[in-house]
Length: 246
Image (tube, rainbow, N blue to C red; front, side):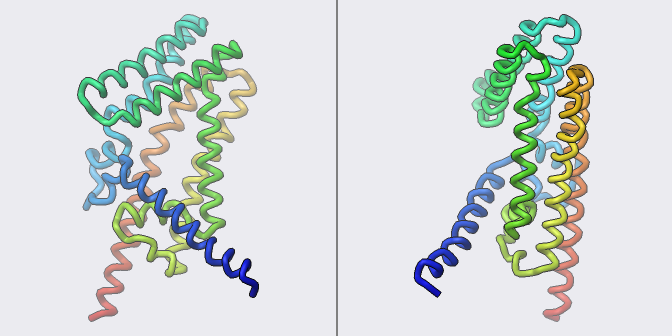
């Protein structure tokens, strides 16, 4: 093997480890970290994992307000202003309470981009364009992680539980996490599959409604199922290891 081949083979794992580490750090700082220390999944833990009540409202209200305002007025400007005001209010409240601004600012930027697209094109449906891009990026990232043999669900679980990347040495566990990663990829694909035809058909009310339905109401049950599946498998693995040692 040439020196260049040797360097290439050494760089690839290190690059993947570095990427895994960065993903892990982001997960550790996210609201999902609430799941890592939870012994049981109750309503409080689930809400915390979704960013808390405020995080849920920040995710839902701008789109809901835009949908209602435009449906009632049939004017873009009032709808854009109403949605933007909601985002600004959330940001101001976090500033006053000296809480983390990341989620609020990210949401405010997303609202600004959505509002700008709708204003520039004059099409209310374009308010939802950034959501398509986001779903597409998540879908691609999840799929690529499986093909790279670093399924993102496994990486996240490893960080949130403190297990690290040891699961990659277990083919069965890696396939399990790969399967869960495909399930999450399917959720993002489903959103695009249902929403894009409505967007191209110009069905604003249907599109806005479906986006709300396929948002938190779809994300929350999938999060619960994922958590239960991971918890069950980890407990069975731990019991099997204990029996083997004794």
